[in-house]
Image (tube, rainbow, N blue to C red):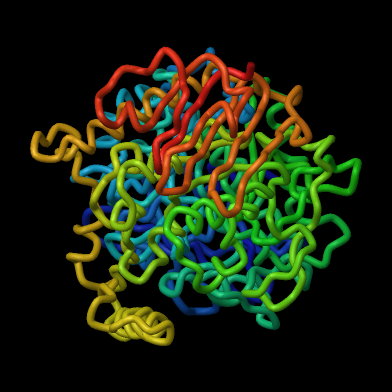
Length: 596
C-alpha cells in the first residue's frame, strides 16, 4: 500500500497505537485510536482526515507521542511532533529536465551550513553561477535530513524523510533543486542508510529497524536481513525514491555502503538499483546511484545480470591517497602503501591501488581487480579534496595549509583531466584557506562532552597535542569552517584568484575530452620514473606531464607525444600566456597537450 499523504505507521511490536493530533492554537491534542492490519501497519479510522500542515505524533503502548518515522517535517526539532507536508503543492519549473549523464560530470561537493555565511539552501542559490563558471555539472549536497541541534555534518541524521529546518525545510529544498535545473545543474543528495544518529532515533520503539547483533564505526547496524527486515528495506527504498521523485533529485550518493550488513539473497543495493532504474524508465528522467565504498570492488557497478548491484559508480579513495602522498610526503596510517609514483601510476591505469594486494593499514589483502578492457573509468568518482579527507584530519586542514599553488595545480589537473569522474570540495577551486573541521551541536551535555572527549582522545593516540584539536561542540569550530568568499577578490592574496582561473581553464578543457563507454581503462597509459619523480599520462586526445620533482624536465625526452599546448600550470599561476610550444616542464608543475 502507499503511505503517501496518509496517517499510518508500521509498529509490529506494539500492543496499542494512537494517533495524536495537535488541534491548534489552544495547544490541545486529540488522540485517535488506530487499528492494526495484518501487515502490522496501524491506521486510524477513515474519518480522520490528512491535510498539509497538521502537527501529529504516535503514542506507542501509552508512551509518547513520538515523531513519525516517515515524517516529512520536524519544525520543532527531531524530538517534537511531526508535521504533514504535501510534495505536490510545489509548482515545479523543470518539465523539460531529463537529467545529466555521469560520464561527463564534474561534481561539486558542498555542505549547506558552511557553504555560505547564512548557511541555508536559499543562500546557496546565489553561488550557482560561480559553480557553472568552473564547469560544474552536478552539485552534491552533504546530508540534509533532520538531526538534533543546529549544525552538524549531516551524518547524525535521524529523521530520514525530512529536510533540516535550519537549512530552510522542504520548500527551500524544492526551490534549490528547481533553480539548479534551471541553471543546467543536476543535484546529487548524500544519504546515510548504514546507521542513525545518537539523538532523536525513535525507530526502535516502533519496530526492528536495527540489527542489535551488529555494529559499525558509527553505531548499531540497520536491520537488512533479520526479523522485520522487509519493511526496513522498503523504508530505505521509499526514502531513496522520495528524494528522486518528490524532490526531483538526480542522484544519490550512498554513504559507506560497506557498513550495510545484508545476508539476503538479493543485496539491498541491487534492490535499490532496480527500483531507481524502474522509476527512470517510467518517467524518462536519467538518475544515478553512486556508492561510497571502502571495498574496492567493482560489484558495485557491474550489471545485475552479471551478479553486480547495477549502480552507476563508486568512489575511489585510492586516487586521493596516491595524489596526497606524492604531493605532501605524508605516509601515516592508510597512506603508508601509497608512497611511490608507481602507486599513483597504478591508480590512474587500474582504478584501485588495492585490488587484491596486501594492505599494510588493514593488515590483510584488500580489493578486487577491475577488468580494464570492460570498465569505463567514468564509473569511478575521484577527488583530491573531500569532506572526509579534510574534516577527519585532526585540525581539519585543507591541502592549502601544506602545499603551494604549484602543487595544488597538479592535484587539480589529475582530478579534472584524468580518466575518472572528478569531484571538487567546496572552496578548493580558489585554494580556500579556511579549514573544514568536525563540528557538532548536540544539545545534550553528556553527548556533547562524550563527542568532544572521543575526538580529542582519538587524535591523542596518534600523537597530536590535544590542545590543537578543535572542540566539535564549540560554536567557533563550526564558524571557522564556513567558506570566506571574500578571498576571491582579496587584492592582498591574488593567489586565490589565480587558482580559480586554473580551475576554470581545466573545466573548459574537460568539456572537450572524449567520454562515455567508448573510453576504457585499457585506453589509459602511464609511464613514470620513480627516481626522477615524473609521470606521463596518455588518454584519448590528451597527454599530461606531471613533474613532481624540484628540477625542470625536458619535454621531448620524457613526453615525446605531448603535442599542441593546452595548459601550463607554471605559466598560468604566474599570469603568463600559454607558450606556443612546450619544451620544458618547470619544477613542481603540470603540462597538458594534445596527443601527438
